[in-house]
Image (cartoon, rainbow, N blue to C red; front, side):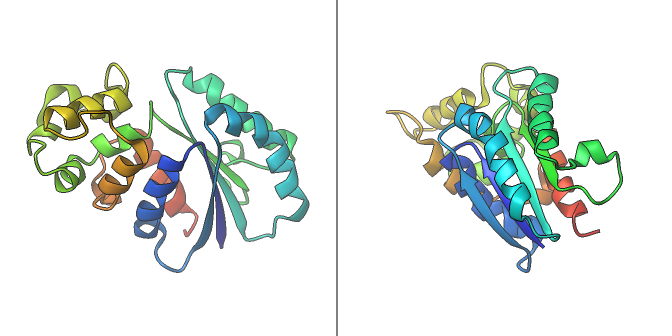
Length: 203
């Protein structure tokens, strides 16, 4: 099996490079295609999927990952599903539990950084001055419900610990934290849905 991942930005790519082998194992081939932001991905997606439709082998799957970014979850998911349907693909959601789908559409709620808060041990390993109690504090217990933006919240946490006083570099932070992430212990529901969809490809 070969999996094509379509992601909106470079920080998602560097995180997946570290995370995917721990989910898929070493024997699943994959490629990550990165766009210039969420709007670029959404704009190009219909044409990109039509291109895949013309040559996609039987054993190839496509995974589209975008940040929710405070957008209505159902509306955003519908956009992704509609693009796949118009290109002639069956999505995992559209298959309704049946096998034989081509496309998996997944949202990081509300942003990729929620997945990092889902593994507080990884944050502390990457940035040892962050308190080890970070995951037990009320604002961070439910990573997908963090108020005020997960990117901004992570930046504040790291700056309070003495890191990045001039601003948090997203790709560097994603690389540093994802190196230590354990997919089996992640507390972010949106990450769990993403992880379990990939694990299901091998069932």
